[in-house]
Image (spheres, one colour):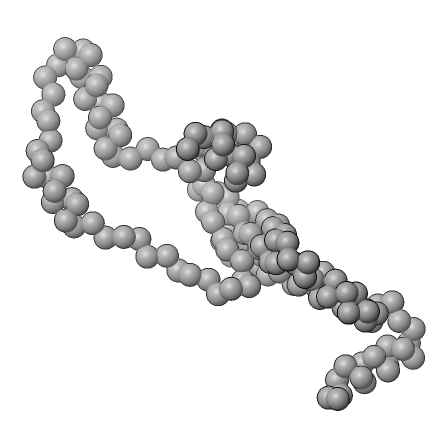
Amino acid sequence: MDVKTLSAMLGHVSAATTLDIYTHVTGDMQSEAAAKIDRGLGNEVQEESVQAEQDLAANFQPVLRKTRKPGTGCITQINDHLFEGRYSPTWPDGTKHSKCVYAHTQEECEAKLKVLIQQMNAERQALRDKMRGITPPDKLTKTQKKIWTYMSSTPT
């Protein structure tokens, strides 16, 4: 798919953002570029053997990713000094709400993501309670809070 469409689907402001995050220079790309420059200068270029490419394919090992538990968000390293934490829960009305946090280290991003998840889960719970007609405790008087606390902690 073209970069502009992909950029729009990912919610990026520009295609440059998408290209910066998802494109990388590989060794093959560098070798091919060097060979083109050599040919352009009139130098002889040695072609790599097909056998070497087959050996690389035979020794391929996929990257095994650490899968996070549902409800814990995900963290992505955007570049050398920036991490993105994303949490995308489903709201009680069935829609997905996605929010991100950014940090310079993975540990800092984990801490920010934890706070974000707690905030979003509190929002979701307040919306669920509102949909059920339950008044949240912060809107109750002291007496009502005592009754609400007793009723919510006592099994019916």
